[in-house]
Length: 436
Length: 86
Image (cartoon, each protein chain N blue to C red):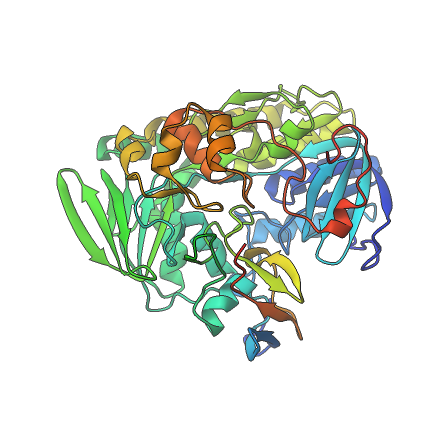
């Protein structure tokens, strides 16, 4: 593994590789390691400053976890594997090249095979006050703590759904915060049934036991965040009771949304995922509907780190023309079962669709209200008339929310996939998939 | 990885600032200032939300170029400006 990249400010630049992997989380790194022994040139990209994805994120507030270090050490033995951090995909250039941008350069990366390992983001649902400074994603809070965010002595409320709430609470507690409440929207019967089912996954059971927090409450969800210029208190409901907690931070997450934008841009077929929005459709070998494109990890449907590692391994082998051993297929199936249980027991209650009032913002980029969007007939109508989803995030936040709130599928993504510099865009050719 | 003693010196809205090495700009906004990254089209103050490069709420100017504060680490001599109205 080496980390050479085109020289800074080398704007007219091309590179080619046999296998391009987008995403250096567990799935992407696992795919790279599975494919590396074939000796072909491999490039791995990630838009974060260091490999590891969200689950293995590290920085000033967290050391790189053991499994990440082991994967990186193993990859370091293969000089033809190159990893580019802080690099994002801007657009497609024809069918087998992508336009890329890093902090100080841009180039066109050609490939023979592509493995999409773009992960997932959190589902954020609008409620009054959710745009106040002090309110963040639950995984977002965890990621920022690992990157050095100071939370020592702060009073934090965590709300939403799923096992990730406990992981966020653990990170906050470890960093010296006082976690006042972990509000899980799912009823306790469902959470208890999920817990009992963990007997089949002893590692997860042990993990759950270490993460369990005394402030954890089921049947609980956030109603509103309150404060003048920043968060001061949170209003919560637990069963029939409504109460208020004064706090410094509120971290919310209602599950995961697969990042399918790159796959969709390249023509990969999607399916409706169990909980939130679309997922990239893959077969048993992790092949997408496009012959030379494979996908692995959370972008094929949220499934956790173990499933991502198995899927990445299978995708890496498929990309070099090998069949995955049965053991990996078995591992994937086992963790797929686990993911299905998460979906089943942490299904979102209908009340969460009614938290926003008409003046609550739905689109945070263009400041479009829930009321004005709810009156539209669909996503395109909302975009055309209200500019909802037309801002910098390109509907990744409000589009996922609208999918859950109104059942509107996000429209096909258009390049650029993320805001890019003019000098980068000037590299785009006029081939199919390039910028209009 | 990073010893607590290793500090990075940079500039935030014209003021000298320092943070431990490996700190993201998003974290630095809280360590060295009020945590606000930008103001929205209707003038609301916004702070980092998703923490993973998706929501774009934390975009700031780094050496004159727009970057996501949650995905960029503070580096020596860097000039960071917040408050972009777009």
